[in-house]
Length: 119
Image (tube, rainbow, N blue to C red):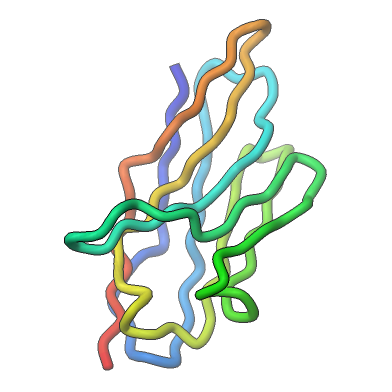
């Protein structure tokens, strides 16, 4: 089994910043792509940012220029620096990781961390 634990969410005002972290543990040989998703009330979960093991990134159009995803492969961690936060960024943010354990592949989710941005 693989566990993903997020941290760093909270309540901020519009224009402020937050940094989310996620650490993976468990049966892991290699972590391939890691990503952050979010889900606002009444909406579908959406991809926010994704990073490959080699460091290639892609972002949702709504966060380009404001959010930056990064990772530390040695520590099995992924981060997301969020700047100039807007009320529409309010959501539960989930960490996601593609994990290989020997010949077994799994896609894994964290429990989520709440980000609330007040206007």
